[in-house]
Amino acid sequence: MSDLVITSMQETWLWIGTAGMALGAILILVLGRGLGKHSHHAVTSFFVCAIAACFYLLMAQGQGDVIITAKDVVLTPEGLAVDVESRLVYFARYLDWVVTTPLLLIGLLGVGLAAVKSAGEDVRQRTGLVAGVIGADILMIVTGLFGALSLDSTHKYVWFIVSCVFFLAVLFVVWGPIRTSAKAQGGGIAALYDKLLFILTGLWFVYPVLWLLGTEGTETISLNTEVAVFAVIDLLAKVGFGVVLVTGVKGLMSGGSADAETGRAAVTD
Image 1 (spheres, rainbow, N blue to C red):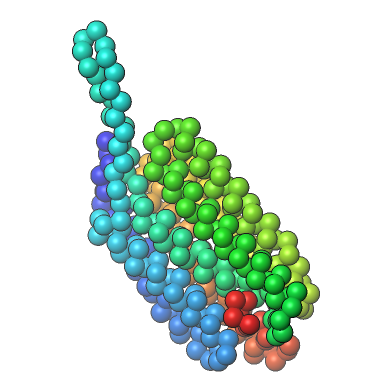
Image 2 (spheres, rainbow, N blue to C red):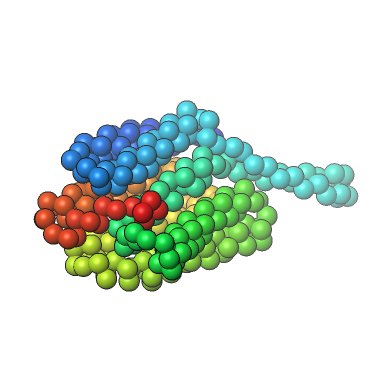
């Protein structure tokens, strides 16, 4: 029953998440000054943190959660018996992720994909890669939410497996064709892309593990621990990634090499 109530510890971590995301958004704007035509990297990273700050504020104020309940009524020799199962779900975190994770991927793809200045096969191929990775990412989050809202164990783990399949599809694209494109552009861009890719992949692997161990999965850890770990990982995956992206692009620009062209956006060329 304790996991059906938002505790003071959860509130504390949700407020830490709110403040951390808000300060991270400001930091990224400051670091992004002077990027010029490459400022879209800072803008995208700013909105990742700003959107996350709003959803953390929603949860901190007790507006971003819902209690889901399932009732089973059985007839016994003593009469009717009712078995009630309930769980508190922070649905707002999924609304956050369905918006912010595509923006994070756009930041990664903006580094990895080469600019295409004329229509043709290259444009269609790049459009397909972007659409594929963003579509798989959105379905990864949405099916994870379906699992979180499922009290039936079979349904829950079916949706978890489906979500993991879409996660693997995202990894296939960013580690495969997009990484190949980054390597073809030169050492500086390839190094920055790999750094961002390792950060994002390493942190994103924590999410399904935490989901599985948390109250939405096997309930091995408490909701207090789950909220705290999610807050830390979210801050690293959003603020940390944004800082590395913006400072990395700035470093390539100041180097005066052709690698400075890494600032182009994969979805706008």
